Image (cartoon, rainbow, N blue to C red; front, side, top):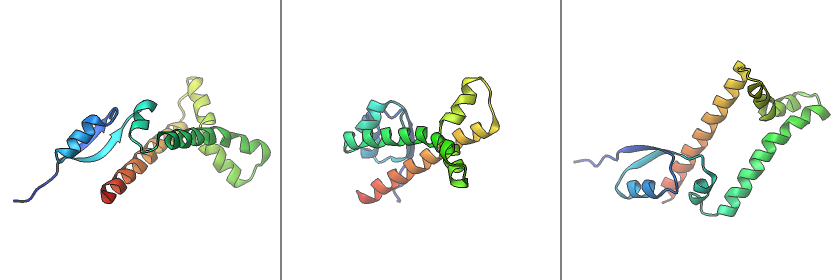
Length: 126
């Protein structure tokens, strides 16, 4: 008889207590999603490093929009497109443009991709 693990997709993971219990019971986590910053920090080993990295990433996504005011080259245009500000301005006006929608969907899927890679890495290390 083969032992097959059941797969879990955890939405609003919280502090990870339920997920740790499911893992101990033999379930395999495919994805854990959480939006509360306090709960996210409980899922990392070092909360200070997690907070600093999150702050730095958010700051860089904000600062990238300033690059085009100093330089008009191709790489400056790419950095400006990566920035959150131009995409959030149109949503603030109530206009939904397809490029902004594609940007936000791409960011969501990129985040989900890196999360699954991180979970797979943790699974292989333990």
